[in-house]
Length: 402
Image (cartoon, rainbow, N blue to C red; front, side, top):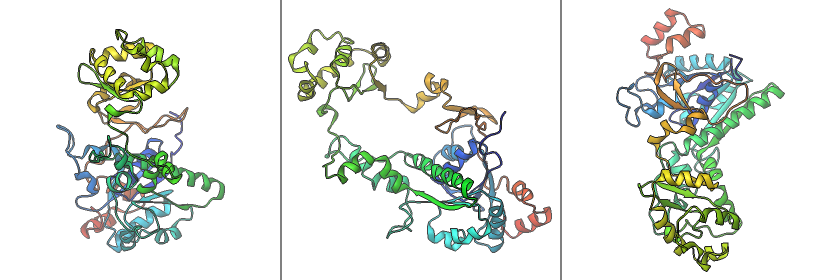
């Protein structure tokens, strides 16, 4: 096994829930040593969200994913002695990540100005809901509120203006936002290689949500009127819409306007001449009569199961996607062949999702289970940073460490 790009890098995950910790998880995949700071007692509240899988550790599956490869240190930062422990870790750290709201950072003594003098090479990473300045800079936010709702995504991802906006899925904005946070950290590490100095970097749910919705937001900034897409039956193009198959499964077409593509697609169906109608002879005409064409394809696709259409459309070279179900992913041949899922080394029957990029010649750390309990590795971490058994016992007795 060759040296990993982040071997020897020390990361402090002093964050909760998803986006900040997930950025640290990606770093751990490439060799970084990540210590997760949790409050004594119940630990990261993310542990208690969701329902544990039967027969598995009593952990939220999301926490089991986002805290893999990490060591948990349960530390009471409200106490001066707890902050002293954190300072010792910071002195040797490369990256510090927090998503505590700014007022909480002040109370706990973990603001950038509280830590920067301890280590001039430290990359201090701030993750917030709404950004570092402005009237809502101190406002807490979740991905549902700041990434999904605030940025126009919730308003636009629905079938028509009369349809009630849909709620987002857990972590749907947090995990993409984690990649933005990871990018900020790695950019700062590159800067440190050039300057020898650390820096203050950050990202936010609102910034990442605007980036995710950039096509629509930019259109609005250019003066365009942006509205939700129409209902499926009223689509502007019958070749860029989803259809239900005989077995109830759905597929989504994404076919460009070239006439040769239309000819190949049309040949996939035993349509009895319906698709030879002059109304469908050119792309402008097909778009003009899209509603009638959708109705025809509804009938045609309903004749066969999804497996049939996957085979026929793939053979014709048609661009489409199946509307997947999460329960199918564990057995998805492409997902497995591409290595997008990995088994935990300490529980090979349980699989997890790999970080979404690779570096040639870099084997990632095989995923290890998340800490079962807050402070599972407290003694191990404290010994690593020079604390004696007696000092650790004293801190435990005082409730500084758990």
